[in-house]
Structure formats: structure tokens, C-alpha cells
Image (cartoon, rainbow, N blue to C red):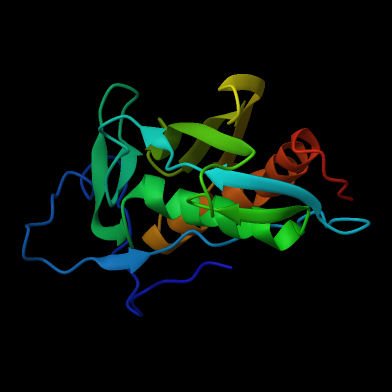
Length: 208
């Protein structure tokens, strides 16, 4: 489920690049959206294991490390939706979704952004490499792509114990901003069950 922080729907993306060529001014209010969908998450069987799992803030390149929603009118061009933004910088929003999803599985004793004591058992480091929409050559279709690399590090000796790439493509049902953002939201919903199952398995938890 997509949860817009404002009730107004952003203006439709027009054919080609005309709509996204407009850049909102600093004083122009933008409708704010939040990616919240987690999909059907696996659940712990037999109770949580005694492990602490720390979720670090994901890293992202400069084009993605912002509150603005990235869209590409051409493969080499970076623009932002002129009438919409995320509720916070993309890495922080994605970190919140990671924490919430891992907590809901109930597989480990503690999941958080920071350890309770001196250190946790495992840390999840992620890099968001793609989280964007693109205008197809026909000018009428918007595709989306979400991709991140996750690495789990054992805190005791800073050893990498597992690493995996998660990625998914989507096609928005229309060029409306609300549909583009909803497709990105659903992309995360498609990735979260696999991400949670993988992370919990590495941490030694049984989930199904």
C-alpha cells in the first residue's frame, strides 16, 4: 500500500520529456510520498534466535541521495519529478523499510539502526544502485527499476559473511505520477520477502 503524505495527486507526466523538464522552485510545495509496502514477509518458526541485527543507512550516489524522485527521459539524462518528492532522503526511507520488514519477521532478538550495547552480532550494509523511473522510447510508457546490493558483516571480526544483489523491474500502469511512485513501492514489496528470508537465514533464524 502506498501512503502519500499529501492528498493531492501530482500532475501527470506528459509524453516525451516536456513535463519532467520543468524543475520545481525551492518555494514550490511538492506532494510527498513514502515507500511502505513489504509484501508477504516470512515469519519466524520456533521463536527468535539470540542475535542482534543492525541495519546501517544505505549508501547511494549523488543522484539518488536526495528526497527527489529520479526519472530518466533518456538513458544518459537524470531529471526529477517536478511535482513530487519522498518524505525524506531515499537512503533513510529505504533503511526504515528494511528495519520494519526485518522486525516483522520476528526471527532475531533485536533489529535496529544502532546496537543496544557495545555492538550487535551482524550488520547489514546496503548500496542502492538504482531506484528510478524511465521514459520508454515510445514516450507513452514509464518503466521502473530498483536494485540494491546487500552485505552482511559479522561485527566481532568485521568479516563479510554473505552478499547478494536484489533487483526488479516494473512498468507503471500510466504516466501519472501516482502510478509511477506506486510501481516503485510495489517493486520493494516484491523484493522484501526474499531480502528478509536471506538476511534471517544468514543470522541463523528459521523463517518460513
